[in-house]
Image 1 (cartoon, rainbow, N blue to C red):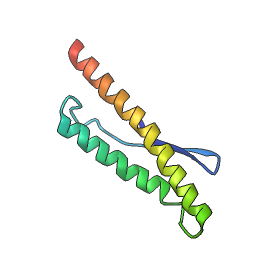
Image 2: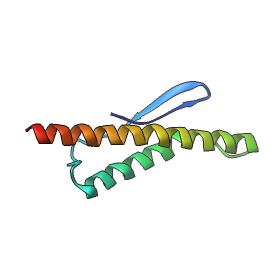
Image 3: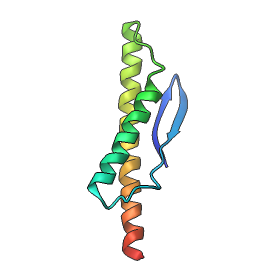
Length: 88
């Protein structure tokens, strides 16, 4: 699933974060996924060098947008995983 995305410089960018090795019914594994997503967001938005106020604003917007999108995607991944586990 795309865990983090942002429209940096009006261009949609996505980063795939794997979680096939995690059991998303486990709070510890959900926390691991969230850590992976946070790292992906940092990498995604690190291209925004903070040299000017505009750069800081752009990086801040990148982080906020990516975190919002990633949060939705993580919740969806957890819900889907748990739904499949209940059906099994």
